[in-house]
Image 1 (cartoon, each protein chain N blue to C red):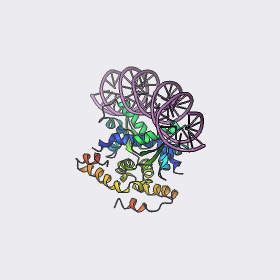
Image 2: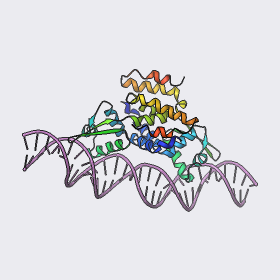
Image 3: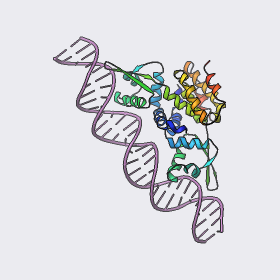
Image 4: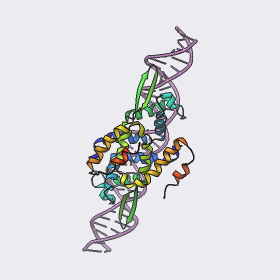
Length: 123
Length: 123
DNA sequence: CTGTTTCTCAACCATGTGGTTGAGTATAAG
DNA sequence: CTTATACTCAACCACATGGTTGAGAAACAG
């Protein structure tokens, strides 16, 4: 069944279930960041943020590159893709509403290219 | 910001972070099911399954229609769409790999046997 | 060398989680 | 009526979670 990747999906969805971690991923989408740079926007101890990073790393959403004393993190989106693929499996139930949400989200990020891909996926 | 729906996304992703609940959603994609019908595939007490249904319902992923003593559940995919929209926001990081996964997932619904290929996807 | 920065680790805490059992409420069937 | 079905609720359990603090370890700056 599809549930072969079940354990991996557990981790990914759990990692995503926390707004702090989603915000971290968002920050990471701008580029590589150190752990303390990731922690800065949140009123939280560095150790706390470090634990969040570890969750993201364990889920395979983030990769770490240690350079001296600094740990640089970067988005590793393959696992995000697995989650999105799982969700897409149910697309037929919401196709109509997706366009609206998509428009809202992309409008905020001034991106313009992906909408055609959304519509043309279901001919 | 994107974090307007943050609380809702917390609930949705948390609901999805459990394989049992994902399997329930999958079952629900075939059509409406009673709580006990949803519970049947799992070696779990009815009360346990009922709690899972409640989590799905709280996340807005499932709607309940009570008819006599039977509670019929059905997929309410709008919230799933929000989650997918969030994920799609990061699509530019994995666009190439997404098509492969999509093909694999949809293929598994009719055919069976490619799960090894999925597992092998890690480069 | 002495500090300072960056980060992890361990211990702890309060709360939440997935699961159970046992009881209780309706509803349906005999 | 009695009994069985479908389900929820409350209490409980072991364990994970999100967070803290207080040590450190390791790399850099002086």
